[in-house]
Amino acid sequence: MDTQLDYAPCGYFSITGTGVIRSVNHTLAAMLGYESQQLLGQHVETMMSVTNKLFFHTYFYPYIQLYGHVKEMYFSLRTLDQQDVPVLLNGVQMERDGELAFDCVVVEMRKRIEHEKDILHTKTKLEELYRATNEANQKLELLHAEYESKQQELLRLNQQLDALASTDPLTGLRNRRFFQEQLLTNIALFQRTRQPFSLLIVDIDHFKTINDTHGHPVGDAVLSSLAHLLQSMSRGSDIVARYGGEEFVLIAPNSTRDNAKLAAERFRTQIEAATLGGCQVTVSIGVATITPSDTDETLLHKADQALYASKSGGRNRVTHAADRAEPL
Figure 1: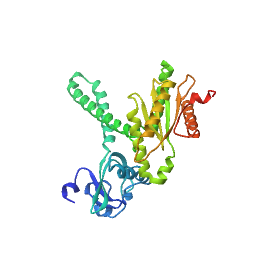
Figure 2 (figure 1 turned 60 degrees about the vertical axis):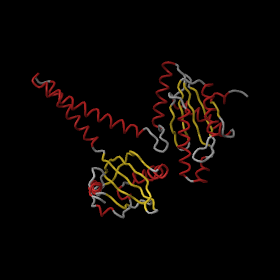
Figure 3 (figure 1 turned 180 degrees about the vertical axis):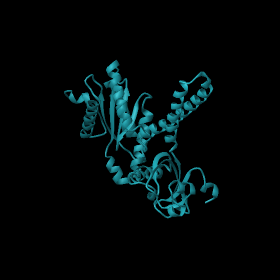
Figure 4 (figure 1 turned 90 degrees about the vertical axis):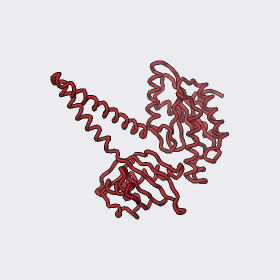
């Protein structure tokens, strides 16, 4: 390894396809309290806690094998004395001499904590100077500018962390946490304005068979392709999220029962006609439209029951919760 890379202002390591560390720069080794030679030949899990080992296997490996790269994954490494170091992790899949390798770069995130301390310290100084005489005005203005700059930096870092916390890493869609927050927001808006909205739950039919037959990487490709298709077919005001497993949810603002059924049917037919991750799939969809008596739990329950009706009715179909109560 050349000197520039060895002492670069960021950590670097390269692992084999099975996770064995082939190279590591001085910066990363020093960050974790090791000598470089202590890490060479060790498994990458040497640098991780039990929790982060699970995260690495659940998200890093499937994502980089599917897409060939990982960008800005928030992660923690473990030092020699068992302390956590928060980092942003970038990785790329390479092939060297016919063997698979993953090259990774990590940047420490400790500055976020330092920014918080600096802001609190600066704010205390500001409060003292505001009580001082007019002779301190020039110094006060300089400190105020410093405070604003650091506050903006903290806001930017918080926004990055919020985006990571509300995004599903596999599909890039919003995650369940974000969806639940938006569901409550839309219910509150309905209670004030009576502007209707509808909830769709989309579930891939026989998804376990896809995983069992073709393997989980293909299953992940199907999920990612379906997520992209749902997003591309949705309106700008719609909220599309991955609810969990093979289930996706969609909040459609200003959407009545009839509008929602038409939109759901359009989703169903387009998905049936598409090729997703190299597979032909169908989906079952449950739909519910808000009523004055609904809470987030009742609305989700009605959409889930409608989905169950679509599944038990033969799959590859749309059911609205209100239609289940109507006589044939």
